[in-house]
Image (cartoon, rainbow, N blue to C red):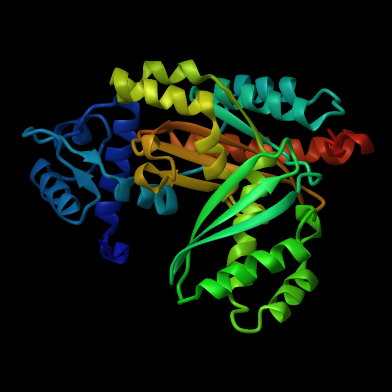
Length: 359
C-alpha cells in the first residue's frame, strides 16, 4: 500500500519522531502521557492521542496491545530515516576509539575492514559486517541454460574456482522461445567463457547482441545475473559483535534467533543479498524489515555502504540490528567510518594493498 507522506503536518511529524526515538530508547509502546511528561510535546493529551490515532490509520504507527501505547511500523521507520533523523554527534570517547582503531598505518585492505567492523560494532552496540573486495580473477568457464517456459529459464554457471556450480532463475518481462535460450548458451560460451568481471564491457555486450538478432534484449538481463553471481563467488563477508543481538528483546524468540545465527554462520544468503547492491552506488543504504532480501531478517534493519577508492569499490561495511535501531547514531557512524577509511587508503595504502587474489 502506498501512502502520501506529504499529508503529514509538522505536529504529526514531531509526534512521530518523538514516538520513534522513545521506542528506540525504551523498547516499549509509547503513550501520550510519556510524550507530554518526558518528551515535552507542547500539546494536550487529547490532541496527542488524536494525532497518534491518525498516524496509526495512515500506517506509520501500530498498536500491539489494547493499551494506548503505539510502536512505529516499517513505514514509520522508513519515513523517519528518509525525513526526520538528525545527525548524531559522536562523544569524545567514541571519536577517540574510532581514531585509535583506524589511524595506524596499514597496508592491507582486509585489516582495515576488520578494524572497521570492530569499531562499528563497539560504537553502535549492534552487529557489524564487512564485505571484502572480490577478486577479478574469478571467471565462469562454462554456461548452460534450461528453458522452463516463455518467460523463465535457469542459467547454470560453472566457475573457474574448484568448478563451483551456481544457478540463477531468470524471470523475463517478455516472451522467448527454446531456440532463443539455446542460442544464448552458445553465445555466452563463445564470448564470455573465461572472461573476468572487470573485462565484461559494452563492446562484448554489443557483440553478443549482434550474435542474437532475434532476441538481443536477453543480453543485458543475463549479464546482470552473471555480475551478481561473480560478486557472490568472490565476496568474503565477516561479522563482529553477533552476540550483541542477544541483549535486545526483538531476538528473544529462540527459534528465530537460531535461524538468524545460522544465517550469519552460513553467510551465503547475506552475501547474496548485499552482492546485489549496485557496487557503483556509494550512498548509504537502509533496508528496514521486509525490505531485506533475507527472509529471517524481516524484523531487522540492515544499513550498508560501499567503500570507494579512486572510483573503485574496495569493500563495504554495514550494521545489522533490530528495526528499533538508533538510526541517527548508526548512520553517522557508517558515514564517519567510510570517510576515515577513504582518507586512510588515499594517504597510507601502499600500491600492493589493493592487489587482487590470484589463488
